[in-house]
Figure 1 (spheres, rainbow, N blue to C red):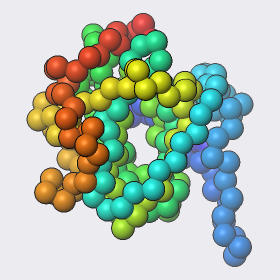
Figure 2: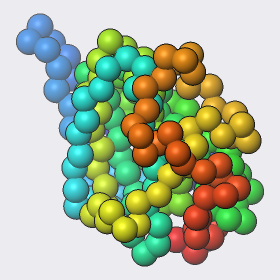
Figure 3: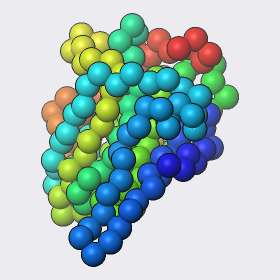
Figure 4: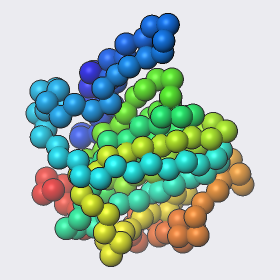
Length: 188
């Protein structure tokens, strides 16, 4: 696997080694030993999630508040998405900045998102199947999020806003400056 650092500390793009032949392809989507060797991080994922969405669906920007914060490893197994992580660690030199990565069934890329980031994605293909591993269980009482269209974040979702499809919950999220964020840089 190849680990690619991004412009924001902690956010990593993971490119697995893909073996292709006339039958198709094979790759390890996650190997704890190899990941630790490549990053120095020992991750214990406890929950895997999967969603299927159609073009124009935007999910996010979600996070869980303390003490139930989550590290995620996400990937798109069918179709194509624009995956986005926003730094919401107070005191971080990159607070409020984001990294956007295109994940697809063709590039097999994965996006590693540590605790202290809000996460979301936009479906760019006709449909997309999206999977993610989490190192903490889902806790509805800690569920939180940020407005996908917060002008301070200036995220280009690559979907015209009038074509965006959001859940009822995601249409009423606060801007980052008003969100209940309790992450402090260097303390997660």
